[in-house]
Image (cartoon, rainbow, N blue to C red; front, side, top):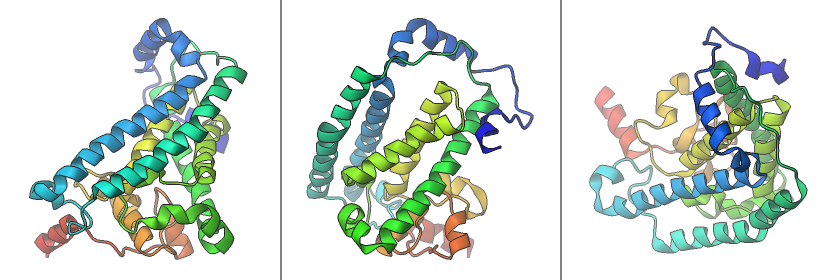
Length: 281
């Protein structure tokens, strides 16, 4: 049943509202969309745009109380040394690992066929949700093992924990092994769930956004963890707690695996959260 989650409807309209968008893309950009380079370029450009925006916020935060009040650690500004260091490793990983892998895909993988029909709205949304749930489970297990097995932690994952208070560029401050692991699951999961290529690209963009948001170091009122009810979504506050107390909060997105395994904690609180709680009291 897992493989058909994208085909469930739950009463959503089945005449695809996405068809006009897909027709436009199919008609005007077919060669680009079929290229093996397209998913990589889409992912990299989205990530760079997001971290660029968050970096501007980080630079402005010490001088703008209206921004700094949303930082989880308002007394610990992101420095230019932090920015150049994390950007340096990100650039190195992309040039040494991502770029050659991209060229390899371009040379060895044939262009993918594009279906004429767009996914229905239910297929698109539920496909992204299904991929996110599956990825969350995979990364939870991977993450847990890399903290519990000392050799794995020291060899592959410790570099990511050089920062106790993460900011957006820490998202891909990773070893090559971790970078490829995340990329592998992001690519594999839509195939396992038999997703439309439009759904696959939507999942890739959503995954990059929520991963960057997890590491951004801010607790905005519009952040997803403040919009999803019952504490089901982890978000930046819980992931910040993981960086402060590394044997907790292993799940990247949802909270249920940490609840079930007893590995969850709510160590970190932002100034904004403390302000909301004081008003409620």
